[in-house]
Length: 113
Image (cartoon, rainbow, N blue to C red; front, side, top):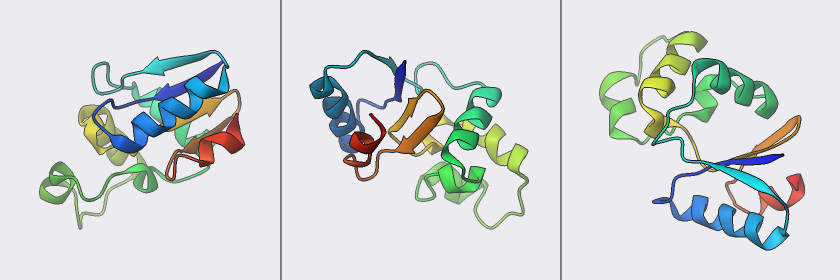
């Protein structure tokens, strides 16, 4: 099943959701700000995206700049930061079985579905 990690306040995330709705395929919406992702779930998404934890971080977020920027953090520390502060996670993320993309630009989602 297709899954979108969605933030309704984000325009790119809303565009990604629209692409999925227009596809006519079944999908699950995960509002990760309401129910934070477990650390294992973040690790799995990183594995599917084939990127490091730092590459999934929204580095312009105030939380990142004030608490983490410039520090020598391990993968686990960055994953913990995203788990504790879901706002730090880049969005939208769409997972389709064993593949995933960050929907920036949202058109990348079309290649996945």
